[in-house]
Every structure is written in structure tokens, then in C-alpha cells.
Length: 344
Ligand code: TYM
Image (cartoon, rainbow, N blue to C red; front, side, top):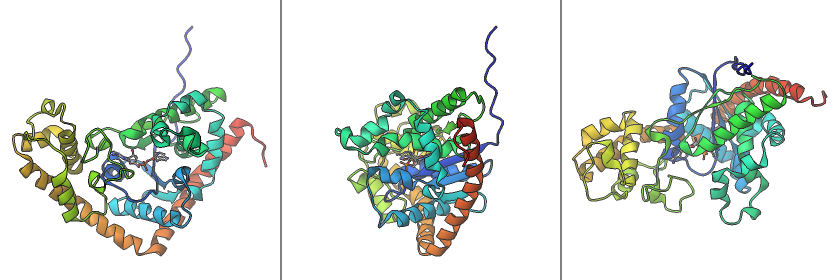
């Protein structure tokens, strides 16, 4: 007799995602995550977190941490996450994140966590001197997601490996505790041309807030002139925009700009190539810069307005934390029971 397949997870479909409150969000964060988050509100219950506990893995910043959390929350709302429909909160306001992370530390295997390439990139040559928290970061990320039994996680491509780890942790927890469908195996939502936005200067590096050159990225708060100048100076070659996808092979920077255009206008890459194929960058780049500015300028203006109203932002985050706790606490109580922890 063959083993029966594990029972399917029957709980509600729920979206969870988060961003670190590190200085300044950029176009990669917007196209890889935020833009999708806004859409998902139409079909899911959504929970969007500002992950301050993740931010302290690379060093303390007590003076600015709270204001950086507010800025990221303001970006969520300005981009279209609706606090009436979705839960927006700061991670450390729901203490169960750290409690579940500890339990998952006892589920995840050293070998699994050691394979995480983002730790290797962030720790650089001197891994011995990085914090244990930075190493353990993806386990906390699994706890973030599974504390809400989230079934779908919209992220950029760089988070793919962390999502696989979350699935492995969920599966092993379920197996180890003989609770086959206790946690769902969260599904990453990564597809689309915005999933991997690269540096404007070097098509082999991802667009990132840690790049020393500000010319490598479009910040969500850049004004129209800055966007135009960064796009005009973006690395390209002397050939025109190709007419088909095959023509993008070996032209990483061009592929990136075409991908950005497709993602921001929510069109396919083929469609963008059909419009601009054969045209020079003297035509394509200004069109791209104008499209970006018309998308980002109203969001930046709304971010400025929200950032000036700390009380309103704090009220959104307080309400979000209460709603998040109302979901997380009963799930954490169930986890404690399943694990057999002491009933205090
Ligand atoms: P973070 O703060 O580095 O990035 C936030 C989101 O932006 C996406 N992103 C990109 N997408 C496309 N192109 C890029 N160049 C680019 N740069 C960043 C990221 O993929 C991410 O979706 N570990 C996470 C935060 C986190 C989380 C979670 C996410 C903590 N707990 C639970 C989902 C679920 C991070 O550091 O993202």
C-alpha cells in the first residue's frame, strides 16, 4: 500500500509580506513588491509588515528606527495599500514573531540556513563577525509568515530562497508534530518583469539601497528631473531597442530598462518591444523616464504628506498591530499546545 498524500491545508487564503525599514525605498521595492501588494488586496486578506526586528540584524540605530518604520508605512499607504482593507503594522509590536522564531530555530536545520546566499552576500568575507541574528534572519522571516498561517507571499526574486526555507520549516514542523496540515506551505508570488530590477549602472547587480552610487537606482522619492537624469545616464549600448525578446540576450542593461517599462505600465515585455523595437535610446529613455515620473511623483507627494502627520500614521500602525495580534495570538496558542509547551 502506498502512503496517502498529506491532507490539504484548509484554512483561509491569506497574503503576508514585509519590508525592512532601511533608509529609502527604491524602484525595485516598488515593482518587485509594493505594486503587487496593492493589487492583491482585491482578492485576499492582506497583512503588510514593517520588519524592524530584521533591520537590527545589521546594527543598532535607536534614534532613527521608529521614524524609518513610519516612512516605510507611509510608502505602503501612499502606493495604495488601504489600511481599512489591509493590516499594516510594525513587526516588534506583535511579540509572538520572536516566540515563533525560537520554536522554528529548533525545527530548521543548520545545513538549511547555511545554504542561504543572502547571508553570504550580506556577511561578506567576515561571516564570523556578523551577528547571529543576521544568520538566523530567514528563520524569523518564516515565523513572520507562518504566525498568520499565510498562504501567499508576494516578494521580489531575491527572496525566493528564503521562501523555500519557510516551506521546508512548515513541512518539517507539521511532520515532526504529527499535525499534517497545521501550517500551510506558503506560496511565493514572484512572477512578472518587476521581480528582479537591476542597477541602472550594471545589469548584473540588483538595484539596492546598499549600492554606494545613487545613480544606480531610482528612489521612490526622486523628482521628475532626477529620474530623467538617472535614466538618461543609465548604461546602454549603441544598438537600437530590439524588436523581439531574443534580441535582449547578452544586453542585460537594455533588458532591465525594457523590463522596468513593462512592469511600471503593467504590460508584457513583448508589447513594449513591439512599440519601441528599432527605435534608439534617445526615444526610449525619455519615454521611460516620463512614465516613471508620472507613476512615482504622486506617490512621493502622498508620502511627504503622510510623513508630516505622525499622529495619523501612528494610529494606522496601532490599529494594524491590534488586528495582527488578534490573528497571531490564537495561532501562537495552538502552536504552544502542539509543541507541548508549559501552559502558563
Ligand atoms: P527587503 O526589505 O530587502 O525588500 C522588500 C521587498 O522588495 C523586493 N526587492 C526587489 N524586487 C525586485 N528587484 C529588486 N532590485 C528588489 N530589491 C528588493 C524584495 O524582494 C522584497 O519583496 N527579508 C525581506 C523582508 C521580510 C519579508 C518577511 C518578506 C521579512 N519578513 C516575510 C516577506 C515575508 C527583505 O529583506 O526585504
